[in-house]
Length: 354
Ligand SMILES: Nc1nc2c(ncn2[C@@H]2O[C@H](COP(=O)(O)OP(=O)(O)OP(=O)(O)O)[C@@H](O)[C@H]2O)c(=O)[nH]1
Image (cartoon, rainbow, N blue to C red; front, side, top):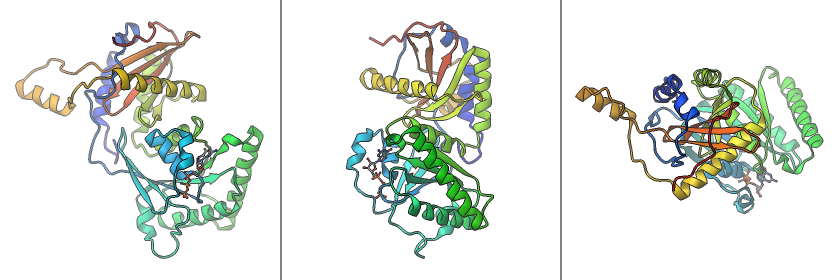
């Protein structure tokens, strides 16, 4: 999926379904909620984009990483120890990338770091600011970091997470954001860096905002985003669907969505539904075995078979009390299903395997 290569395996599945999406939508089979394996495997060997998590001590970097990528309950982050060394965390999923948790007390400007290497391969800098604390010093570090980035790799996406906003009123959140944006804009202008584009996100590990912010960060690193969006647009218009997300199930990051605006509630409800499906999978899931598409295709062509050998992709449907139907469809075994909200609810409620 990464490194500019065409997402062949993903497209295989998406396109196949796009050609014939009706059976699962109109007459869904009883839901088999095992998400452990599927017919499509992810592309391996592509370079991993790196995400740098930086910020002052105790700003919440390790908590973000633990909650998003390790499903740690937010309250357990209270017991996380302070990070003393750079934590390099490979994230193996739909899209492989690395998250580097950069301890707050490390000064990368002290001459011991090769900044060319540090920033050279980085796709995005996520700078975490604790909104419940004094943030002037954090802003000074942010501005220095932006200056260093501009010297070494100006292509890096700069993302500022104004974090821990769960304890703040809506007005205070917006005032804090406005203040941070204003100070940063002024300071960068004084440094002669007024053309630098920065994205700001209000985040908390206690709600969906951290997943949504991460989704937006990851999407910008996907060279295939345009293709995925087009496929989802086609799906939405052909199947009378209100909103379609392509999710990475384990992290609950949405990798792509159709081009209609994202309403947070749709994202939240899909995200909660994934939790339900994963919990069911823990209890009722079964191992569907390994079936690599490439292996199947090679074997089929070697014996001249044209039959469809693929295992059925797994799906699940849930009808809510307000008539809305959630439809989840697995795309590959690496945790990436579609998550859909059809406007016309034709489906029966979620049926669990006995
Ligand atoms: N209220 C609130 N607290 C948070 C949030 N995220 C993290 N915290 C708390 O902030 C504290 C510090 O979090 P860490 O993740 O250890 O911070 P860090 O940036 O990794 O710190 P260092 O390892 O010292 O660099 C913990 O007690 C977390 O529970 C949040 O969104 N809201």
